[in-house]
Length: 287
Image (cartoon, rainbow, N blue to C red; front, top):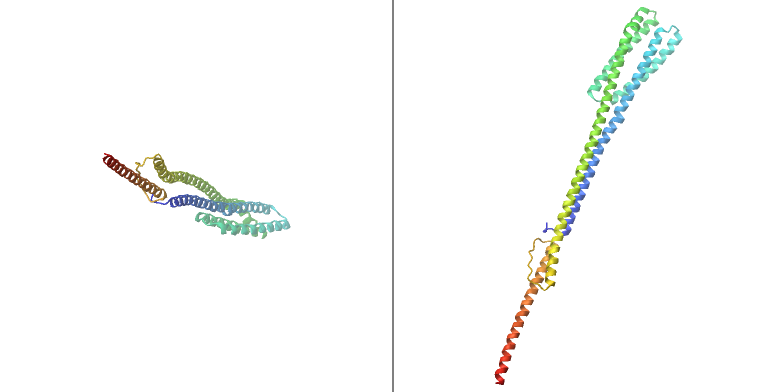
């Protein structure tokens, strides 16, 4: 690491931390998007289907009651009024049926929906035929439906609707469980990466700090050694960063001071020798 400039090390460290933050944000957005899709599917599709099918079932039950009343009613005016209400409710059921059709995509749901349509067609055709027989005075044919077939066909029709409703409820529960698992997984993933980011940041900070502090401490030790008039200190230089360049400059200063001191000592020795020769010459002259 000492071969990298201090600024480069700091930039790399900050870039790494920013990258981890970006990863955390990306994962958070990813899991939020997945949760949003599941939530939208539950609210906009599954719950809506469940509400529509429940309303459908209530309308069927209401028309079943009206059918039973029509059977026992002898007043033509009241009969006509009730039949008109049945037509209105059937129109509502048609509308609900088409809305449900547009929101059903699963193969099993489509199969259940088609079974509902089949049971509805069978029941409506038989009921319309029986009412026509009753209006035409064919009481025996009408009685066969109202007393024998009606309850069975109504039960089969309602059972098919209940099966479709039950399947929609299962889809809601399944999506809700998947949403819970998705949120739990996202939470664990974010916590794990956050812990990893903290540990990696601490390790990176330690390495960068040590790579700067240790050479500075060595430089400080060399400067203190020189200030105490000890020029014998030796230091190994590794790397090409700013602290290594500082150590290299201090080492050159120490070496230069050593050479200066050596030259001074050598000059002092030469002066001392010359002084000795001059003093000896003076003694010879005086004698």
